[in-house]
Image (cartoon, rainbow, N blue to C red; front, top):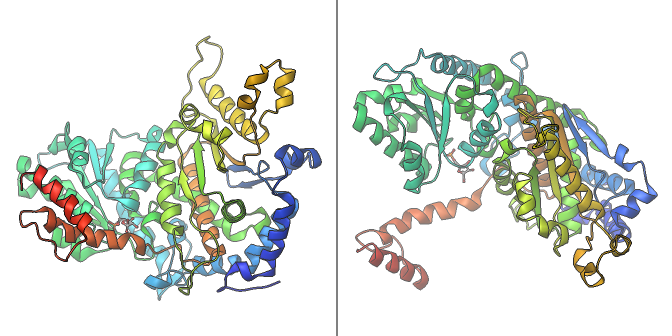
Length: 551
Ligand code: F6P
């Protein structure tokens, strides 16, 4: 077996074997795969913590799995995983460790990185977060006029927004202290204006969340929010109504937030991996420190599974291998995630940043262009809404879109069906089961004829099937289960990144646009001059905008 931590997998004999095998299985239909291996529905499943994952509805046989895990071993997946978990600087372009898993280690664990036990640092901050949110939740922390805080507004963007926003939505059932959280991210002033429209400054607490504390959207929104507050309550109110979450104490102080009101995290936590850090402060304010602890413990459960389970039974690795299989061998360009849970409405958006900012890369860690396909396009909406929007393309379109279905046994709340006898949650889950089944097995022309279908409609009604899906089930959408789901996808993303030998932890591609936006502000302003000469299209479009604005 080849072993390597640095080379392109397409040169490995394991890749050649997989390619030859692909030619054998590519045209097999899931109907045939189930006919020849009727037990696969029971066997091609894996559990990780509370998650039960069925991957039998994939265009693979048992040999495919063996070849894929061989490839993962050859790519050094286990070595890379172990290096990440012990704090090696896997983020080479920024020379940083990648240790979001340390955020969820229990207090009695130890992990020394750069001479420091980072677990002690993590729990020191968690304790501070707990003390602070206890005070807010109990009403001991009051606003400048002595009123209780009832609304927390998290100002942040990217990883400083998507994680807490998604988790707050998913755990709304656990928000038990009368604290409502709102999220402001976009530099479009409509976002802040809508969030503040019906709020009372006296009962509002702002959490300015930014790893770098230099992000233009966040600082612009925070400045405007501060103006809104001080106009109503005066400058001295800032200390009671603004706290910060950041790695950059100097910039927080420069903004005017007392570093005593800053909750710290570290450069070894990537923005899109930061929801378990102090970036989750708004969530903790809503659900309390105990539920937040369960959320972290859930992540840790899947971290351990990822660290310990053999690749053949390692859920995030298997999902990563399947993702790689479709993007590299079936030319699948997108991947849909379909939560049958309305409370997970923001989960697809959260996964977009996690997966696409991580793996949207075209060079390997050594700077050489990749030979593999990287960075699938992730998207999705909750079922059953999506069924009445885009599922038509999933079922009968010409593209192959692998799908993840997410579902839960117990609803957080249930209602009776219209006849009063059934459960609405059962209806939801029956839709999940129906969709995965129809995607996989479809409906043939023969079946339509037998059912007495009109001949001219048969081509339109044939459902090709053979559309792959994974089903991820859990007992209930609890804080722990949500943590498990997040860690599952984090490690899947990592596994896919290792197979392509890319750095999943930097994001240089978003930097140039940020710089140019700053340069272009002057072109739009009164001077009409850009800092640098621009192309004719940019100048013309900017000119149109300026004239519309009367400049
Ligand atoms: O979009 C780029 C990015 O750097 C993300 O990776 C990050 O989550 C986001 O901006 C926000 O950054 P910060 O937390 O430093 O404000």
